Image (tube, rainbow, N blue to C red; front, side, top):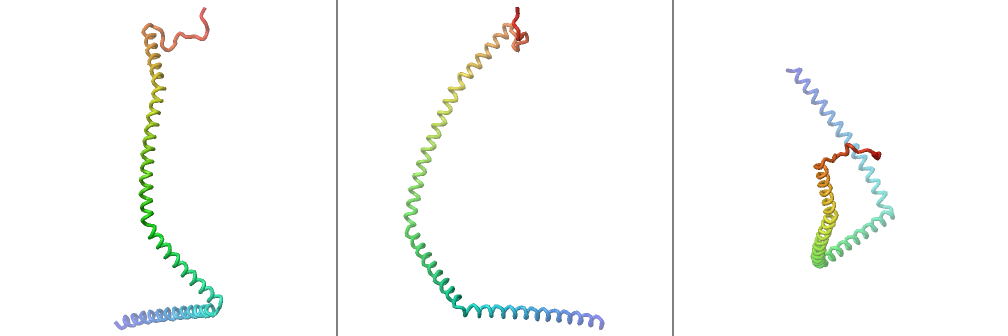
Length: 154
């Protein structure tokens, strides 16, 4: 039991020493970082160029706030006019859409008419040719030209 107690105390001591070292190194790191930051701020704070730059940035940000407020007010005042224009333009677009649909329907009808004007005679001619070939087949003429030659018979 005594050996177990000694081993336990040894582990606890090692853990306490490791934690103490971590805290010490962290403290040193933060201390050096704080010193560097403080030195940089002291150097920048005293320079007249930095002060002038800060004043310029302040003036620019104040001007940006003014412009934003002015724009906000103008948009609020022009809101009803924008809604009216949107409704007028929406109605106009709907009228144009209806006219375009009518035009497309007219073009489709004309295309069907032209297609039928071209295909009807062709279909009739094909039907007539088929009927003529059937008449020839009934009369006994070969359909595929089995007796055909490229030379004239004498």
